[in-house]
Length: 364
Image 1 (tube, rainbow, N blue to C red):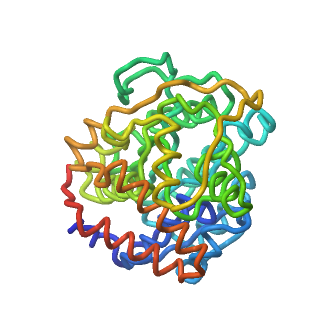
Image 2: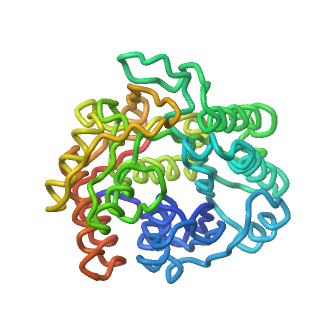
Image 3: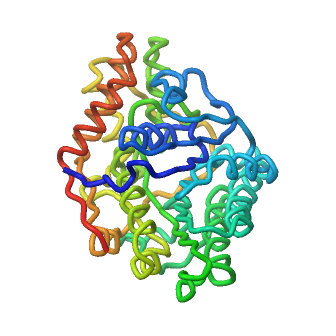
């Protein structure tokens, strides 16, 4: 069993709790006995995991915009967090072409406000800033990217995530240096994951949500770039990594200092599959539907992208627990249950329990 008992009674602040990953993380933290406060804008989709799984019933939920520093500071002072999981973001590459300013404001300014509030509060604190595998300068290399590889981005979304990483590095060097952690008390790390799927995602321009919408309309699923390869993983795998990283950031000062850095949480190489393989496996498990290639003149996308997660395996004992087929099965089963009108909070809890029952956690 994964040992996350350290979260019982911990005050956790989750930014972006109305989103897909933030909603799952908030439910998991609440199930672990944490006192969870969520701050985010209202759900951006209908339906949403926030509503279908009843996330608001398990957290103290505040709707606010992280681009407003004063609103964040008020919620922060009320919550008095021991740990902050910063997931609030504009998460879509294609939208970054339409709304570059909002993307930069959300992903860069929002991260700056989290770091500034931590600096102003002057208390012992752990922070996990969630960015993306797209923060790396992608040269289509065969091997997975390591935490020390060059950051960059040819689209605004990727660049904004690289900027967020650079911001954290600069704040850590300027205000939260590891060698003085006993004085300032702030341990901040960044977490990078691959292409995450799972039940409850309804974002636009994502393969599985687009497929679920098409199936609901009785239409064939339009698929862009079917030959592109991606490191697919179930949402619970990287979330477990964030939780393990969080326990290290909450530990003794020596452990916190080691954990304050960048971390990859990518799937096993075998889970790097083509878009075609994913949609065909999903439709087979879902039990209905067809797909067709759709060239819509969309912006170019990287053909190949994968992460090397050796650091997390070696120092946190984290490994992805669900294979590609298990990931697709859990995702398709969730959406089938939602279509059937099941209690989706119970489905989320059952899948969390199923993942936890397989996992073994260690520490730095």
